[in-house]
Image 1 (spheres, rainbow, N blue to C red):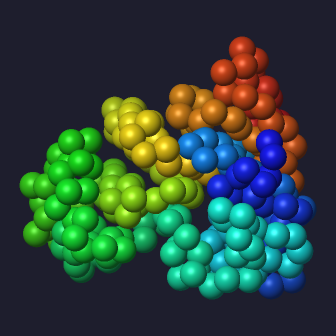
Image 2: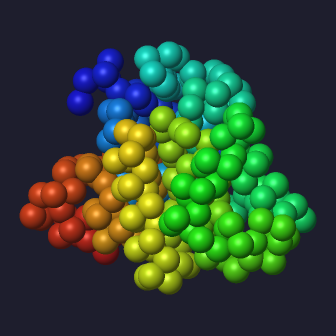
Length: 237
């Protein structure tokens, strides 16, 4: 796609940890309202890519632009101000704070809280019932749903989502898929989705790419009849 029209454009990005290079010259773009899934085995660089986009890891080469603005060297708080929400693989919650306080921490404008809570509460009704409960006492699946709800309540133009389905029951995964697709339909939100659940990724995403050893090894459209087979071939080798 045309990088100039992208809400997120990553070009020739190289990054890693210390002396170790993990992401190697990756280029990927996400158009407004588009969902792109990055798939691959563990340790292939998918999470590292998201952390570099967010500014948690420095880019050694390449460029990251959001809404056409170069954010490659920006710290995470400036990246987040570009209407971007990040849901990490690690359950980044404040366990000793209440559910309500965790949700409020994702709000750029406190005046949105009641309206946004009512909306995400339609998908995750337990949240409205447990606002005063300590977040650390939620189940693993509930904590992940809270993370997604917190990101959605920030009214992002772009979400970066890192393996949100890991360890979740199929019924919860289906609920997450419906929530993300409903939000895209309602607001035009775009998403870069890191996943190993191929079925979920193809249900939610418009396009997919397989990351292998820090590089994009294959890519295609999710509605292509051979999409699942092509992805499976990469993940099984």
